[in-house]
Length: 100
Image (cartoon, rainbow, N blue to C red; front, side, top):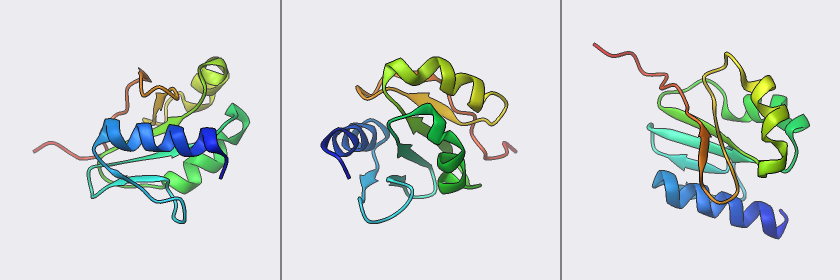
């Protein structure tokens, strides 16, 4: 992967308290509690959704700030959050866990 992708994935892993594995998908995993996928363009969001898949906990797409407006439209109604390359969450993720 590129250096900006790796840096963004490491920042997301640090923010979520997870681990970054460049050889596995999604890029960042935090046990059963969360995951994140770093990309460089909003047009890659459908691929992100496939890679994040259904699961428990919160899920985020990590994109550069310039791509957020387009990505928000594509993520609307999915429950997937949006984070920029600096780790700032601009759209919160809905947790997939049911509360009892």
